[in-house]
Amino acid sequence: MTVSGLSESGLLDRIFPRLALGSRHGAATLLGPGDDAAIVAAPDGRTVISIDTQVQDQDFRLEWPNGYRTTGFDVGWKAAAQNLSDINAMGATATSMVVSLTLPPDTPVSWVEDLADGLTAGIRNLGAQDCSVAGGDLGRGREISVSVAVLGTLSGGTAVLRSGARPGDVLALAGTVGRAAAGLALLESATGPDTLTPEQRNLMTLQCRPLPPLAAGPLARTGGATAMLDISDGLLRDGTRLARASNVILDFDPQELVRLAAGLEPASTLLKTDPMRWVLAGGEDHGLLATFPPGIQVPAGFTAIGSVQAPGHNESPGIKIAGQAADTGGWDHFAH
Image (cartoon, rainbow, N blue to C red; front, side):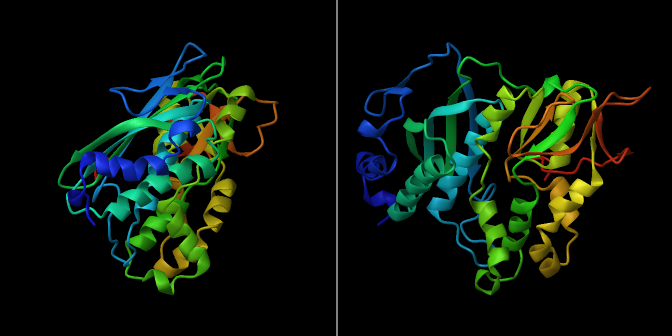
């Protein structure tokens, strides 16, 4: 059955039970679907908010060159992960989200049900236990598009911005980099999924279902982080954004970069690619890049990978590796 065989209300009847709605709302959702708008609580007096969109053939393919077919579960999980990560990067905790789906008429109902399951599984399994889906919208279009807006709370704390890094700070990473990019390269290759090793399939899965370290953001905030952001477009590109916002130089330790690249060997050997390219320019792992004052222990889940320096005379803020200027690389929606 496709969505054209159901009314809008009929499709919603299929989706709602899969989104942990009704009596299982998070505490912040005071009124869920059924009226013209949801009502959510903001006991902190402030709301952290972010929005992201996945569009078919731009952010995902229904069938990849290597033969892998993207499931609705994949898209739902990724929609949850990338939005929860943005809230995490502020040091906040997600409380609720709303979802807008644009669907071609020939979309299978089962694919949409899987998307709802993936969205719920992402929220639960990634650790956003205080978050739930408060509502959303359905529409018809030429390709699948999934937009998610997520709300969060700082629980009385101060948000961690990109602009707070200071010379002398320690540069640290939570989560991973390069693995989703290696997975994307496998999906775009001619190597069928059935011929991949478990290690290679795991990299492919991390592109489809990222694992952002959601516990790390609030820990960084309470642990004294001076600046932080989500790595969605590549370590160097996103690092440059933090460096420019803070007017500093981020200097990466090459030995730590080599350590990060070591986990990508299963894909780099198969595809004959330098794994450092994925580490430096690959996005969508949704790890956290943060800076901490010198002399304090970085919180659990973070690893020191460099230092923060003041720009030299006539030097612009940016990125260095072992003191040498580095090309930015990374993803740009309108440059690719």
